[in-house]
Length: 98
Length: 211
Image (tube, rainbow over all chains, first blue to last red; front, side, top):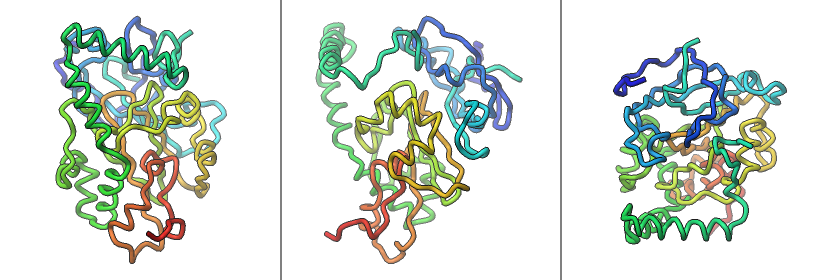
C-alpha cells in the first residue's frame, strides 16, 4: 500500500472494490463495494481522504482511478439498457485484482 | 445505521436551521484554533458566489462553436477554462468536462454528499444535495430523467458519473438541432444548470424567449 503514488493498475484492468466500513471518513460508497469493474482512467495520486479528514497528511498518496461498471451488474432489476454504465472514482487501496 | 459512507446516516438536505447553526459553530472553532481566518472563509464563499451557471454556459457554448476549443476542453478542462479567463482557486477540486452526444447521455451526481463543479458554475441546486436525487439517480437514471421531463431515445446509452473523490464533472450537453444560425451568446442561453448536470438536455431554440 505504501507505493509512493505509483499506480498498480492501468486502464482496461479488471478490479473488485473491497468491502468494509472503516471507522473513518471514507469515499467508497457501500453500493459499489464488492462489485467488479474496469479501470477507465488513472487520475493520478491524491492524498488519502481517510487521513486528511482527521488532520493527517494524507500520505502515502493514493492513486485514484475512474472505474466503469455495468449498471446491470450493480442492480438486480436495473430498468435500462444493457449498455448503461456507472463511473465512479475509487482510491487504489480500496481495489483488488480479480 | 450506515449509509453513503457516513456512519451516522445524516442527510444534508433536511433541518436547515440545525445545519446553519452547526456551520456557524464549526466556523467559530476553525477561526479560534487558527486553521483559517474569517477572511479566508469569506473570500472562498465570495469566489463560489461569483460563479453561476451563466459562466459554465459561456464556456460550453464556446465548445459548441469552436471544435478546436472543444478538443482542448475535453482533454484538459482547467487549461481551457483559463483561456476564457476562468481560474480555479488553489483549493478547488479538479474539474473535468464530459460530452453528451446523440448516442451517450451522462448524468453527474455525488452520492456521498454534494460534490459539484462549484468553482465554475457556483452552488448546486437544492435537489442535487437531497437524498432523493442522490439515491435514485444511480439506481434508476432513466426514471430520474423522466421526472425532469427529459425524454431520450431508448437506444441512447445512459451513464451515471458519481463524483466520489477528487474530481468534479461538468457536462457538455449535446448541441440541439436547428441552432446553426445562432450566435455564441444566443447558444449560451440554451445551456441550463440542469443540462450541465445532465438531468436535462440543452433547451431547444424554440423554447427560449427572444430578448
